[in-house]
Image (cartoon, rainbow, N blue to C red; front, side):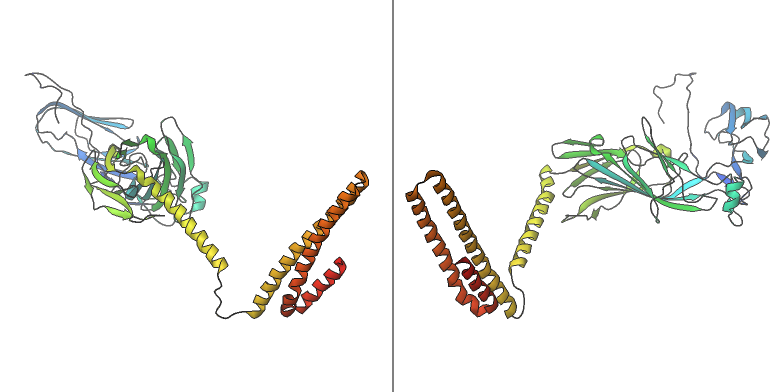
Length: 442
């Protein structure tokens, strides 16, 4: 620790030191029944452990409740509601130790995150997906005997059991989900605050001492709030750890940052010492060589003081963003091309003569149908010519039109007659119907 300015001889300075002690309290007794209250034993030092001689020293202990079973009485000592005050003590020698023990009621949740994996997936299309897999254990007094849901609901027993806890997500979080191995947990509640998103998590069952739960939380945030760029250089600035619950303690923590395919990782800056593991590869849709994954692990336990930002520098060519859309276009093109080939090619081992005959008959009938349509058109032209004759009384024009219509009709009639011999070889029944059609037309 360094002071802002050096102390002059005889000068004074006020120094505040905050120390977080995980697992400092011991359950006493270690096992309780469902209706019993939870008692803990805290052991510490009456004096502040300093390398200096203290002229005067006072120790104040603030408890979770005013129900105190016993406490050491190194005079002067006093208790007022939830606070026990030791001292002031005069002329305390350096490194003085005198054991302090306080046995009192504490029904607060003693939740510990035994394992947590935080995955941040960065997309260059404007989104960052965050998913946390969390294992939580209640380190309170272990439940003795069986659990009665009936008594828990009727008598509101189990005062030390954890029924719910609150997690705070970034203010820009959206598409939040909360699930476990069974599926979505619908008992959760989401509340949007000014500077955060409050997620009230309620497990499927209350957590008594020694009980565990496993769940997954995920959400999306816009990348423009956390991703900074200059040309092909990018910097990702996000929290290493998010708030899980109040007074949290995380034992085993792993952070995985999945970067876009084609990224080159340069440097990872952490606000406190961490362990950088070997980079991994993550494969998803349309990936060819995989996406680089930066893996970071914690050193020691983590608390709310570790909710700080990291910086990850990497390079990414923006031209690479068009590779996947081009791959999609090429894939669809190949698919439709193969579908066209499949529809037009015959993959049968032996020829089906009846099928071939039907196809030939169908082709000839389609030709005859088009010819007959043109003969129908000739009939319509003849009707139109008669109407004009009645109106104009122009016999010469009528005769010229009829001559042209007759020539067209004869041409189509002869073309249909030319199809009958080949059709009679393939299907005599259809040929007879065409002959009958010719008679009707004549």
